[in-house]
Length: 347
Image (cartoon, rainbow, N blue to C red):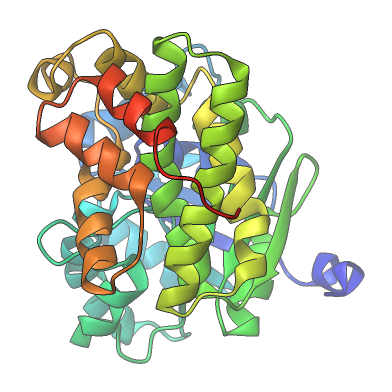
């Protein structure tokens, strides 16, 4: 990639759909690369951001850039894209909303004068179908002809919104999309790498959440740093084994969207998945944890990942143990102990 040529191109006009914590953080980053409009589903959220340069629900203490515009009007968002000479859409929505959001927005792009590349940020499997994001897109007639890809990597929204350093990967087989994302986001403290292993990148982003729950359980039980290191290492092997069986490349899982994201999510105090594991280690049941408002993609993802693995006869003992604690009420201490009591095998 020639970064000099990238920096000389015209600014990217970025529409971020979804004003959650991650969508808002990426909108902050995109402001450095060109005009950015953040679309919020709820009018009161858009109005609050526009009036106060703060988010009413997320990223407390973060002052948003004055250049960041926000709206809940789909008409204004489409007009923003219509006037752009270099448009980009970032879908900052969870995987459970990807299908419906694409069905709502993608048909409207056909009327625009320029093709609009679309990059999604969600991580995980769709409930009921167990599909990865790119597999969902492949099912949608509305996505036909759309240039799409995934943006993933080790990143906490609060740190990105504060302008702290972060490295992410954009995964697509369309080099033009990759270049557009680089132009929008690669600057100052944000570094963007590229990959054409879309499937591998998405699997890393999905499974790291499940493995982070396991590490949270381990830490909550005070099993120590040695045990956590073992879980992360064997978890990476599990992730790689699963990903390669589905068609991903092994080296992808040694990069930002595999090992990098796993280490961050399994050890960082801002990780919601790790916090779910910590709560499970204290004997809390899943309904009690969810009732507190703590949600994590690993909870939704674990059962779907295990189902796909079992269909392919892939051994995933850590994922299976997490599912047993989450859904079968197995005591957390027993689940971790059984993992370490498994039979001897070659690494």
